Image (cartoon, rainbow, N blue to C red; front, side, top):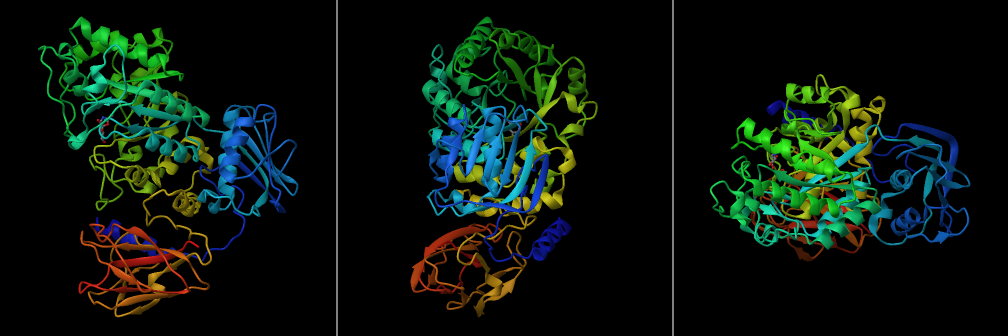
Length: 621
Ligand code: NGO
């Protein structure tokens, strides 16, 4: 552990953060890496004041989406950006051409256009993400990108059972993952702690089973209309929703709602802890199969996508024979409803059902039951828990998350090959990659973002980009360019010290505290997670300060700080007393945005315990 931490600190020390420069991104410097990039030397396209978007036949919805992102009008003839459904690249692929005359995205499908738009978005300055219109004088480097996915299934999962998430948080996550060409949203709708979707024939599932969550909070559930609203929102982003009803284990919320689903006919109390493997539907009762049939039929009726996920993990209170009896009856219900079965890989030993898919979440690289099921025709989605679980902590000091499958820094999430991961499972049997986010410790949208970013883009690149492009050296640079974009999108991400985070664009970009004028404090480098070469410790003296001299006047700045206690350590920022609430750990960095005026910014400690540690200042405007 000591060595690892030392290595991380060394990495951070070697990363020189350059001041912001407003120049065109290198063509192809996007995540996930494109299949081929051919830059055209000396060619670029600069948007004029009358920039607009042209939608070719059938491309109106994607044009409207892009117009909303860029705050540009739609034109009726070829314009600065043209979206054309006449491309040479099929499926979800696209071709992007940048010439002196304009930008063209061509594809054969709307999904292809949408993915091309995500590439273009990343070639434009991060400031396009700040939600306001701005002078469109952006310059994009010339050339051609031809791009298409390695795997058909590129997923994220959100567990809304352990902690319920309002519709707005789900949509926010869908928006964020669309930027990385994710095309599947696995919706973990039921577990021991909560049932989150209305089933008309079994109404107590939602009203009773949905009435709490981990820790005993109010929980919640989605009406069918809300679920369909999410499905439609996802579809506009070319994301397919895969609903999961976990069974026969992970069913306490259902068992608490209906006594007859229990072998002893007694409903257990609702459960608000974080244990697993203790509940099961009664596999010998006929009513259980009626229940499952009704639930799956109602869910299939509101789910346009091709899959239903049956869960199937950790039914630890059943014998293998009871489990097989249950699954062998339930699996065929899914094709009968016109859908394809997905299950966690514990379904491997039971009978094959046409096209069924196993989601591998183990922590080893071989599993004979999975290999055997693949031999019988099953396909695999890879979510190895020690690589792809977004609920695992990054380091031992990550404030939220679990660590049962290991610590997953961004490089660990990136360094594996899904096409050659499980022994005896050929790349042709791999449908794709999914990044699950379990929510035992994840409560808010900020928590979701902090755990997903920057690892989700790493997993998205594994799912989309050809293995020939795989390079940690290249990826970490491209990933670092995403940071300012996330800041402007309001994404609260983990500033991994493995990544050279680019400065926020602005009048002056980022200014490290250790390079500013320091009075009484000291520059140090003994806490992980800082940017640049270190941070400033106010050294327990009231009146010590860090003073930045900016190249021009700023009106809004953001200070990054850490305060190892939970106590607020206010500082005087240019005459105003500003709260810097405790972050709970000296390696947990937070940001505080402050309105200022002028180009000299002084942050002065005002308590006898000094101020918080300060990492840097960023100029917002
Ligand atoms: C396991 C378990 C889940 C937990 C998760 C936490 C699977 C498939 N079943 O993954 O119930 O929430 O770990 O990391």
